[in-house]
Length: 157
Image 1: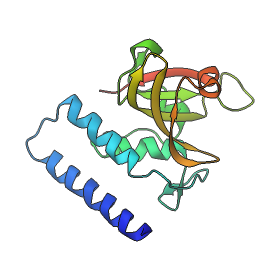
Image 2: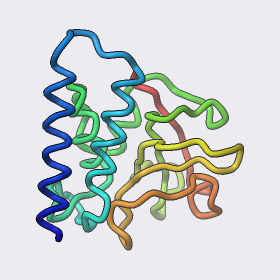
Image 3: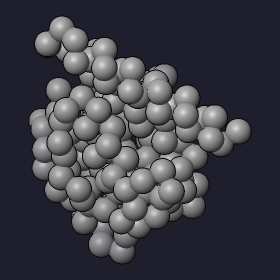
């Protein structure tokens, strides 16, 4: 079952990359769709600090691989990723934006990241990330835990 899911997701990513290479310019909407689909293909991958594969990955690797699907290379750490693109106010978030958090002891030091996957309402913004306890999963930005630790959002396209 796990191998079948991996094969299906890999084939989907390959086809999306192949299709995206045809035709030159890709619209923002197509880029966002591909980034989100790529990120979601990692759902269930266990968390591993410094990990970059389906065996285990951290949050910055999830962003790195997801944006790499549209040929956008991000730095490998969440702190450096948080410097890329245009700053976005939390109330102006769009699907595909990157969101950054300070979840450690230093309340200003960014050490966690995710990608906005859905905006369902004013207080229901979903993002995908690699959680230390759940692995790659989607959460609500407005849950008390993440809302308190949210530090910034960036838009790269």
